[in-house]
Image 1: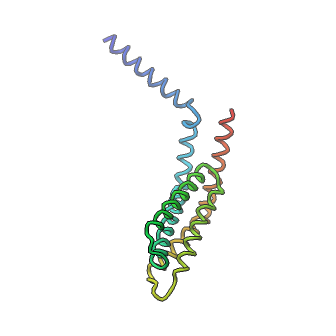
Image 2: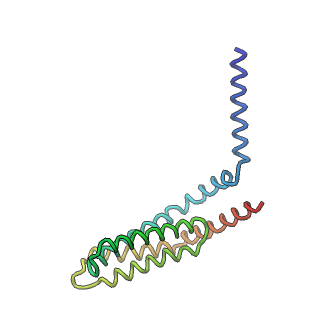
Image 3: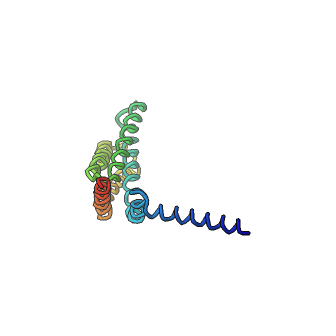
Length: 167
């Protein structure tokens, strides 16, 4: 009976020391809950911007493929490279470099112009309209107040990380 009580006390002591270690943990452990709580507000806007940009690129690619070129391999390689650059830009944005937004804006504008350049008498009207609306919604999302607030908040988080890293 005594051995069992001492074993329970030892396990409780280990749990307390683990809990206090978590409270006084590293920078990532201290910063992560605050970032997660604050980014829950901005994540839907961030995800909407990313996915609308990807959809507008996809729709523009289908338009260009149907009108100008029939070289599927070259076009798919270009889309793959563009997707990689776009995701790298979004990663940079999440790290607090707000100038990376211009990478996304560039891709959306290119998609919009590519879609507009395919307009003609044989253009499928519904698909053309959906492509234009997707590009315009992506630009609207990126220009929204919440997206800009998210960018400002990410800069603050980056500066906090930089300040804490110096200590």
